[in-house]
Length: 106
Image (cartoon, rainbow, N blue to C red):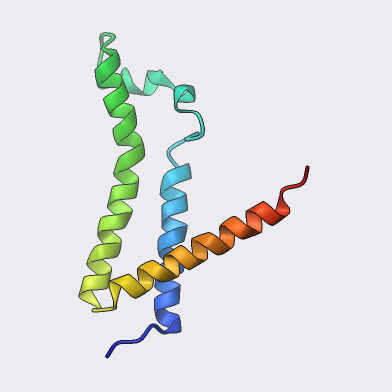
């Protein structure tokens, strides 16, 4: 049987780190309308709002899907329990959320 070790925790922490980097590295996600539409003019010369929104969505979703697929490939190649590492990622995310909520002041 395979058990979760500290090495698996490290893999989970790196997954969380890369998710944050890919999420916040694309720009301001908090308000989607604050994205600079000028970045899509390189691909679409005339004004097509639906195509521009699709390009902006790809700009956000592509890094996250790349991180998730590499994480899946790594877990399969070194044969670690995927559900165990997934639960570790959930625990790390919950701990970060609790830390954030305790730091919020009124």
